[in-house]
Image (cartoon, rainbow over all chains, first blue to last red; front, top):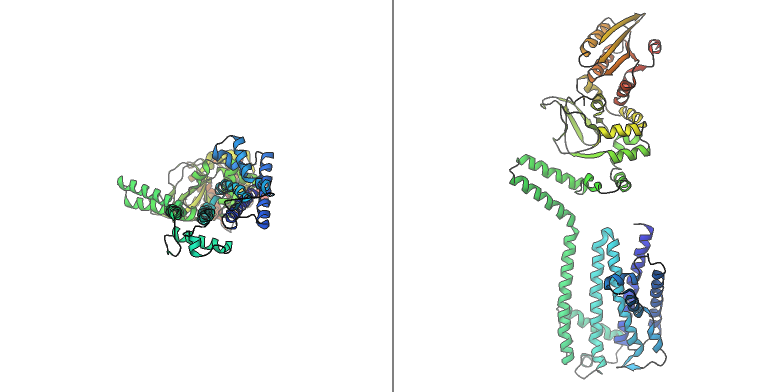
Length: 454
Length: 108
């Protein structure tokens, strides 16, 4: 993640927090306090200033993505001006117009009624969450949990406020729940707590019954709340299940693919030992390479990116390959792009007796046996740091032995055409190969004496 | 493949002409082994007129170097560019004594 992306994520986190705080404060004050208090007003206006600056900033540099405005326009698919109008409506402190000469409407300050326009910031909350999920990379699951908490929190907050403000605007009828509970006139915080308690008991289907509906409106609202609670519960369960399954998504996908391959081999009556070898290969691929085949993974990347990924992927293997150690950065770059990673399974033949030279093989991991064509004679072993194929390549001869992998092994192949091309473009390759040859075991030289040419 | 041998005091200069390949290798090896049997202290191999060395030719040279052991030595000179590259890249140039020309091969 680059610096600009980090600052973008930071801005979105800030937008998310400020929007949630302002929504919570505005709804709480509206439902439980009923009048605009100076301290909360300062908080609300300070957040307004921050959002207005954000809107101004995003319009000044339209290329900057992630403004609260930018998040809304495509989502609502509205004309730019209409969208901007809605955004401004939710962020301009219009309630200031009513601050002096404030009147009550249904017992609630007009300032707070106008302030409800800040709830438009719900769009900002989800816009920020959407962008954070896009830029989060591997933390998507964590952000989905955040989204879940935000949704649940907002629904609970609004239901809590409605449960109390509904009897309030009716003038607290005698059969309303606050009257029956005797909390009218108690502090806003206590009323909020009881209201929240009721909402949570209904949402969670606990339903102690100590607080309940007492009149038609409350019964209707209770039915509504139960339905919302059931939907919310379903949403939480579905998101949770989806999260748990997505945590293992790559593993499940990989092994499903392996199962498909195995089923195919079984259906085509392929020898069981071969099928088992295939299974073992995939197990190795999963353990060592997270189930990814490097060549497939890298094929679609442009050269500079492929180079960067390869350098990082192979940083543990490169020190074992002398040609990498001795090459200049430019040559190393060229080799990295030209070398093909090859994985061999136990007993697999890397090259076979009689084959024409196809390139040089650099062993990065594992051990190989050099055997006769029929496998009856073992001429020697090659291990990490060794390489072969240079003699047949330079002499234009066919191989006179087979190289068999003892276990799972990793090798880099430099194809003949790539060798000759790089040899022409980078004359230093010859010196690099000469220096590398001094580091390999004398097995290859001894093999030549025995008539084995690889 | 033509093989000629010049003798100087304490040294035998073997001059190969042609291709040192599978066909020529047995004859070349027999010739060099005969010199080892004679316990010639220094065998100098002239590859100036050799345009190709196959793996069989390499085997002859390696076997001779091994055969002379610590009692004698084998020096090579006159490698052309492609032969030199085979020797360098394969690492044989570090285990075989290779010289620029006849004089330096004899002088060592």
